Length: 327
Length: 203
Image (cartoon, rainbow over all chains, first blue to last red):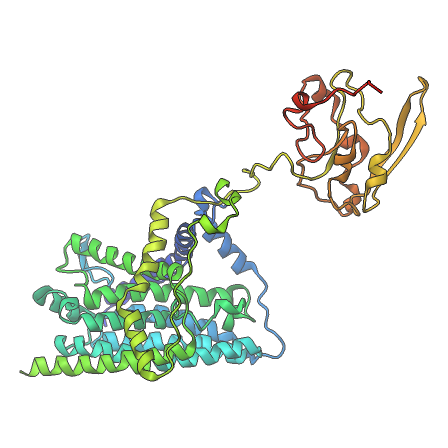
């Protein structure tokens, strides 16, 4: 491993960390504004022009707030749980190619931290580990509502993972690789996977909502309970880390879906990069859109949906794909 | 606002919603799921919120900067009016408001002044007890005590909201002829002088 590679990787890691922590903050601003407009409200208006500096105000508040560790909690787990959510969200970013490779000052940059062979498997696995944050945090909180929330997290956890895995299996069979770069290159030659695997696309998209814990499947931190589920006992930046994790996850999954199904960044042209960002913006917007439009489902409805509807469809999809590829 | 003034629900486009019975067996439930899935109800919801976002018809009032207009009959903190002719107080100290006040919160004291006229020496309204019913304004024969539109009050004691000096129309407002008459309970209706009858003197 030469020094240049090491320096390049460190720089890329730092850039991704900084950009996406900032984006997670700005994501909350977009969410509040778009939800407000859809509900005919104004949203944040008072901090800065059009409330743009609200993110900064929230950040200052979260960072300077007292970090309360209640007396009955299991302190080590309680403290580490938000870090799991945030850290795994960013770890998943390591295998995502955010842009096509480009040359700057005669040096070719690959905007992916590491093009590992098991890319998509690694991303899904690490994102799944992220759900341990709400689960452990809720269980360690010594709070009944947090415990209930942790139970729901477990229910979500065992439900959507199957669908995600099986849905993505059919495209993987077609591409023959787990690397997202290979997915992209496959789609340059053969067109978008969306056209050949529409069912897998819809299933993966639905599962992405459960993965990020967004409305229709926002039942981990169930807003209807008025309190914040697993985050009930958290305060200050520990609670903020849950949020950064959630929003970073939304951004990363919004990158993964277009790369897997919608042609990724294309042939490496500037237009392809812009198209990827546009697709990412649409999927992120869709997360907010559904939150304004759709009701939440109950845990039993989510499990019913995942196990009795989506999983059989995914299995049938895999079988049909296999048959088509064989003959 | 006008659309809400019509309380006749029979003609407002109201109709009974056709609610289907809940399915009892598994096959019925399955049919309902299939119907709901492919009828695209979810997209109706998506369309509605997107339409509202595109229309951008926001209903928020940023309150301290903008305020909703309040009706002329609004009954907030009391006001004491002055006479247009002489800028003196309209209150003649008759004590009717004190009598009619159902929560017993008005206290007044009168005396005979140097011109042998009845003069109000003390006038207090205990706003800790006042229920803002408007009877005092209704009963006042001189339209002296009325309700105003001042609803932004904060104090550690509600009794501190007003005193007599505060209720009285300021003299510089009178000088600008800017005193506003109350249009609520007890006020003269707009065409009162056409309807008024002379006192019969035949007896």
